[in-house]
Amino acid sequence: MLMLGMLCALVGSSTWLTVATAIGLPVSTTHCIVGGVIGMGIATVGAEGISWSWEKKGVVQIVASWVIAPAIAGAFAAIIFLITKHGVLRRRDPLKWGFVMVPVYFGITSGILTMLIVWKGVRIHTLGGSVVLTSRDYRPPPSTSMTGTWAKSAARSSGFPAVSSP
Image 1 (cartoon, rainbow, N blue to C red):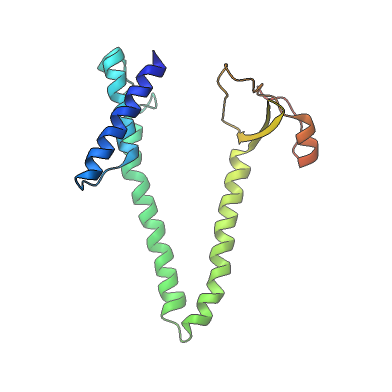
Image 2 (cartoon, one colour; image 1 turned 90 degrees about the vertical axis):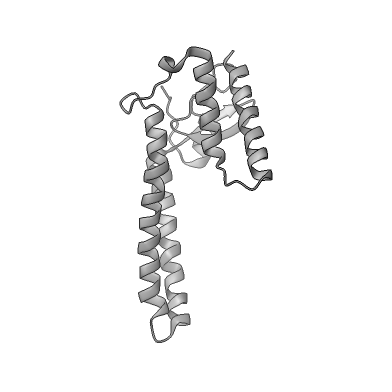
């Protein structure tokens, strides 16, 4: 039943995206699929069956992220622009300072991405004899043959510790 409901949410969302795009409306795929899943949930269990609250990690958190994430991204963009404006564009030789700042920006970006991987972690699984890398939070569905344990041979060859996962 869940699979059929998700298929209906996907078809409904993609239909609306196609129609809205054809007539020139600005649309968001994320908003559409969230709305489709909420609509499927309401049709299946009713509005009282949907988790709306903040405490239960409900729909309010998704809607809040649509406001909070662009605000944070805008703040970071403004900071980066001001650094570039005053550190590169308003300097005597902007080309030279542009070449100086490129490695700085690249280093900051690489550091952020590296820390994200370190903090979130990588889990190594075996799936049908192949090595699969997933995030530490990923839990494979019970229907797959992915066991959820670390692949000892892949862990040895990659330098990751070979420990069992919960």
